[in-house]
Image (cartoon, rainbow, N blue to C red; front, side, top):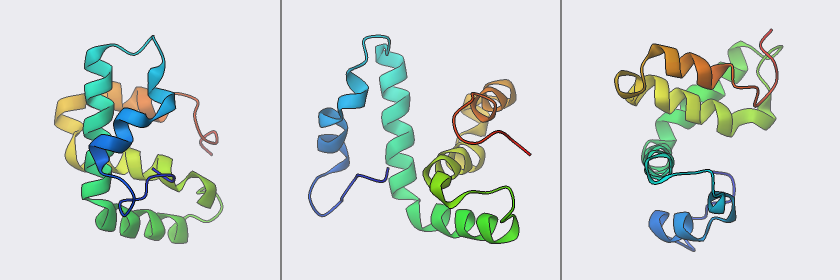
Length: 103
């Protein structure tokens, strides 16, 4: 999310050129899900930025500014895709080990 520049590239073009997605362990379903989440985070970026900024302001001891992209992705999943993802899978996203450990 941090390296995407909408003035230089479209979401689809950026997604196709992303080197981190060349991982052979990603199947077609996983790549489609990642693409949808990336597009959703871009589409709702203003709302997600507002939410994350407020979250960091309200919880400065536990929320790190360096993890804003992670918070945006989790917020997108929570607000827009929770029904698709399911509570258990969402919990796995939260506890996956990326980012700082929960306080």
